[in-house]
Length: 233
Image (cartoon, rainbow, N blue to C red; front, side, top):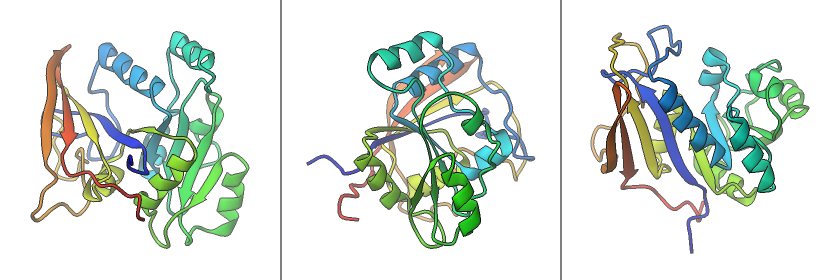
């Protein structure tokens, strides 16, 4: 039997020193038009795109498919023109006027916990499906199982670093795409590809799938070796 969760991959652009944003946690342009087009194709080929609440609050992404041709192709296949947009938001802090609600058609899902304020959850429920998973922090394994039952088989994760850590540390990631740009951002508090507590031992191991020059950077694709089957959760 296949794992009872979607195929999960992380896509991110980072500087040559491994930073995905500045010390102010503001996203900066690291890659160029070719990488943006590659990312758009990944979105268009996914059933859903997931981000953490930190990414929503700092960057306010729409997470839409930008190419008209790709949106039309999705519609021709009987899909919404945008993949399901998912926010992992333990305390229901997603603003009602966030771009994921204002831009582009398609389904939205907010994953919250039992600790999320009831009034905020009710407000968000007017704009998105609400999934309650976990008591104090979102149980990502159970969330993925729930998403699988909703027909989400291919899940693209676009950060941020805290969500990436939660997924990687739980063994819930299958592949990672990293575009490494030709800039150095620096800053000891600037977020890296994966933050969180970090491993002391038993590190998450990767195997290289491909590596290619793209514009002035390098695109690296990894397979995560220690992903987990969560069918028994």
